[in-house]
Length: 131
Ligand SMILES: [Zn+2]
Ligand SMILES: [Zn+2]
Image (cartoon, rainbow, N blue to C red; front, side, top):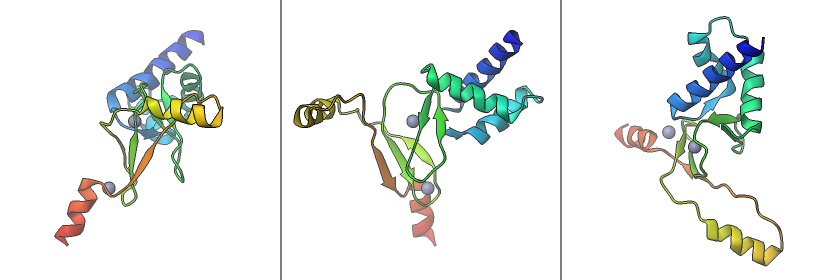
C-alpha cells in the first residue's frame, strides 16, 4: 500500500512536470491514467492535495475557474484568456517590492501576492482578426 502511494505520487508529479502547463484535477487524472490505467480519480485528487500541502506543486486558484495545478513552483504571474480559458505563465519578474510596500502601509504580514492578467491570448486574437 505504501509502495503504491509512492508510485501514484510520482506519476502525478511527473505528469505536472512534463505538462509545463496548468492542468485541472480531471486533466491530471486523464494523463495519469495513460501510465496507470487502474488508478482511481479519488487517488489522483488525494495525491494532488498531498503534493500541494507539501509544496511540491502549486495550486492555482483563479477567479471564476476550477483549481489548476502546476509543477512550476517559483512564483510567477499568470495570464488568463477570457476567450478560450487557457492559462499562461508570464515571463514577467515578480515584484517583491510590492510586498514590502503593502506591508509598510498596512502593517499586515504579507506572505505572497499573485497577479492575474486577463484578456485575449494571441491565438484567439488572430482568429478574431481573420474572420
Ligand atoms: Zn485564447
Ligand atoms: Zn504558472
